[in-house]
Length: 445
Image 1 (cartoon, rainbow, N blue to C red):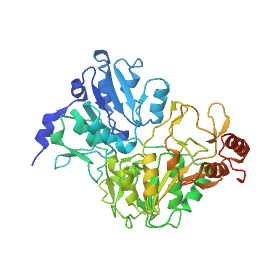
Image 2: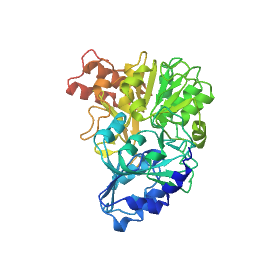
Image 3: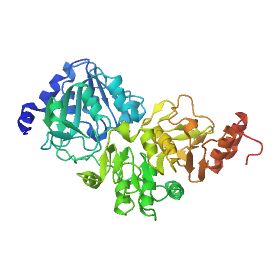
Image 4: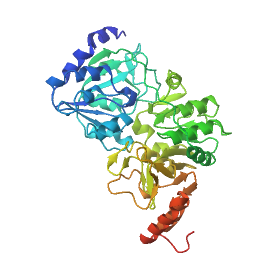
């Protein structure tokens, strides 16, 4: 069957396509590199004729025109499921609102609760069967499109074809309008700066990984440092089961560490739901049968994660307290990122036979503006600070000073273990705080 006549019938300029948006509409922009560029610019041009258009997006790597042209938020009101550095800056200015979520539930939010008037997202070119591949962002794209009253696709020829899995593509019969973009180069991530603390933490985690493990790496320099160190290790026959596919996986693959052949589920396939990294990483994805794109309600389902034997989840955080509560998304009430999938993988890895979940962080942090140094281990999380992982889900915590396994531990055991991996300069004050909170035992070290 020839779908190109239907393609031509649905083809529009970006300016014509966004005319379907009406004041008061809910508009969805996808996630990460699925966020439209040309359609965003075209919609921003309608600022004077629109009001109260509510736009949802997530993890935008580029400035959004609808935010830049409307600092009053009268025409466009943008909210994000997970803040990128750009979105965090806008949130600080009052121009971006955060939407709390546990990442695995994102498709369900649309299926059960949310209205979508217009969905816009970037896709790869249509194939001969009439399908547009979601490419670097599977996440909840199909769930969003299926809920939307109108679906507009922005086609970028530079987007790779990501094999699935499932829900990695949408058929032209489900699409209302198609816009051929300017085919801008894809955003690529700058190289992360690795510190001595990162290296010390990475060494400890790598020592805990076994041959045949499946690896999840969270966002940030420290998890990526672990991946790079794995590439230089003697480990073999590792697998991929992750939400975010990053360059560290490519390094492990090129070093012969990733084979996926011993995985207990999805054998032979590296499983992921969105990707962000280098151009070489994007090229590795293109039509690669060794990689499988899935929606996030599959990749991040703790039950599915737990089916992977020797599942290893590696994530970082902002700070923890002596009870084992983890904050990975805010400083006080200031939003930094989002819950994302950290709790999904902390839970799922612990369910896994032989699985381990690591929360890693440097023991101290220097404020970029003032230079003031503070401990990342605090007696209690500050008022208003968001708990990403509850204390009951804590497993391994790792700093440059050591590793602590909190699973099943009492409050006094947790306090002792956590203080033992805090920076030495802060331990005495932490012990005094623990005593005051009655979670310190006289026999503790």
